[in-house]
Length: 309
Length: 219
Picture 1 (tube, rainbow over the protein chains, first blue to last red):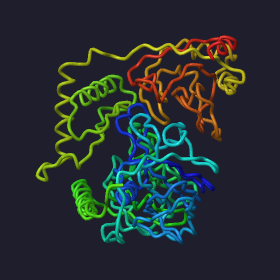
Picture 2: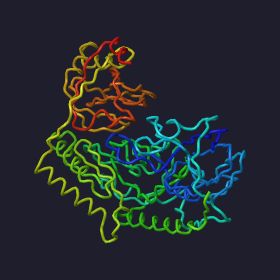
Picture 3: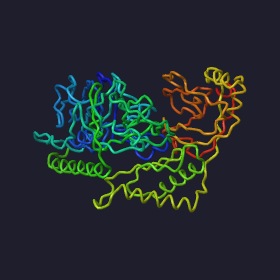
Picture 4: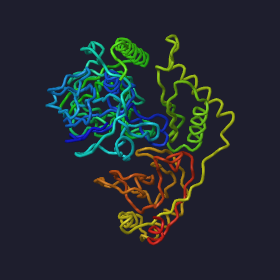
């Protein structure tokens, strides 16, 4: 079972839920920038939720399916493609992404999952070091992806209750907990709206807006950073680190985004905006649990909607 | 969660950080996903969803774990210590295009600057930036050189650079702003290696100058 890449799109990579245990080696978690969308996309076609799928960025690919398959597109929305529900693709058919109407990154899952080898415990593509995913790189026109055989297939006509989805928005409010140097910046991070600049990528979102001035030039000790860490370089324009970011940072760390709001950040496209709201570690944990509870309800709801392949 | 044990260049604090990180890894505690020592800091990455009891505060649990491990590593310092690694480097020429600039700034010729760089003992303070990239302390003051005004779009794998008071080696090709003074034929990162990175924090490093023909013969 194969998929032929007719047109690859701007940046289409194979991603899963990332790799753990190698940050000390300088290897970031990687994986899907919006793990929620990837997990749901997989659940909708009967895959394990960490199965490798395609992460599509801003412009979609055109794919030809050698055999019939079920797919789901979650995250960013594109014209002509119903989102957050299983879609049947017949043998020989082509899947085309129309114009993007919302978000930045869509996750295309295929029943069975994409067949790629794990590298350092993850099947996602890590572009900076050229390993993982499909040959360690983004897809190109003419590539052929192999699929694993599906375990089961959806039946009936249904979609999911969109109330379980994160509150995706072109100007979301992202909840953050204070970072090590938060006190030096006062309330500037919460004072207004920031704009997403075009030189944002899987490593980080570069923002412009209220300038974050650090009064002192006190010594900063470089330390590990994480997806969601908001760094402030000397120019005062914050950078929100994403899952392919470098593992150690020397800039001031003003805040860290709550994990539950990472999908909102993942869906920010150049020109979109973002606001930040002060939260607490306890609230961030509670929000993560609540999201997991919603996903559990979704899993239970899906349990009777598949039959053996 | 980040534990800061002292200032960046504080050698005892860095040793404490290494000891604490080692204990945290050895504790194999539930919910701890990754542990990273860098300079005088230790960062523990944890998954709050793995602390299943809602009465149990994940943050407090990780704090207690760090305190316990910190106390233990203070009582019984690690005997392991870092390894000693020898890295051959071909200095100057096409492989080290900034060596002349670095040498001029410190009033030496290229050979003198290379000898100074190769003569000093270094310690790995952190591994990051790209996979396997070692931030090395111990660069002789004469060689301290600011980063390039305009970073290069692509620095080849193996390039040895100077950035301010630090020196390091680019394990994979990447954009970079450091002054490139040479290149090593040794791989600092292999995704299929065990461990993948050649160096870890606490390791001692020496550079050894090799000729262009010796560099080529490594391939």
